[in-house]
Length: 357
Image (cartoon, rainbow, N blue to C red):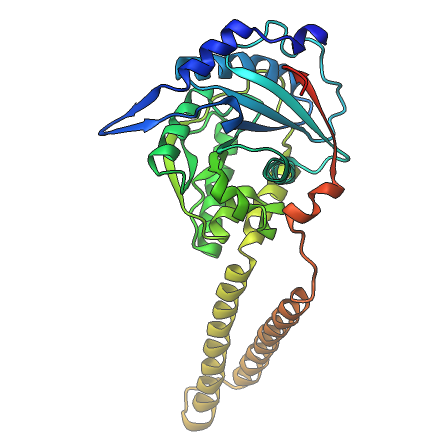
């Protein structure tokens, strides 16, 4: 590992000179990131070391081509496979250091992101944090685009990569679009983005105090009403190995996103049930009117109709009652605040590449 800690001073100096240059944006000239510590790339990792070893050189190449340099922070989400010694055998030009933050247990990538963001906000000085997956599905070529867009917005908005094309098969796409439809019906929020994004430090300080971040990163940004923009990107394919997201993990991931909007879902369902109660009461009144004041009644039908409608009415009232008790109980529940509670989950951090501070 010693040779990995020895960085190429000449290449590093070139990167430092490059990042003092300007990035040209249409009709705008914006000063670029000035030092590696100003840009941090955060990646949650669970056993994807082979894919990561292929991704890092591509990321370094894109940083170099766009006159950027960065520090990489890997959140080891309780991996069962040890970090390989050849993770970065040839060194990098514009990735100045790679640190691994080990978690005490496996949490899933959403909570790993929450811990990583909280650790960076509390312990590392930077201007922007790139959040991306370590399997290669987030294209490194889009990293400079995200940074440019964030700088163009004066570092006041979180910039997400909106996926215009997915690389999965038809089976996954069918269920994914079904989920997007259900999510929109229940929450009124369109699913457009994943984790791939850039977070300016001003937004990061607010984001890590949002309890919903513990469940879902992108949904927490929506819920907290933090300023955000999206840019279109194409999702790439995994660089190595199978996905660790099985059907159970995908369902839990989707439910976690919807859970962030539990209040919206609850209100919408409450309105729907209330409408059902009104329709039910109207139907009961109609049955009684027909039975008592017209000759349209069929012997015996009114009794069955009133009984069924009364049972439906009782069920709807029970749903409303349960919802009220759930809301009242949730007000007494202690929520996880990532910036406060991450220290109980985060383990040690160690450097696998770059100069040891």
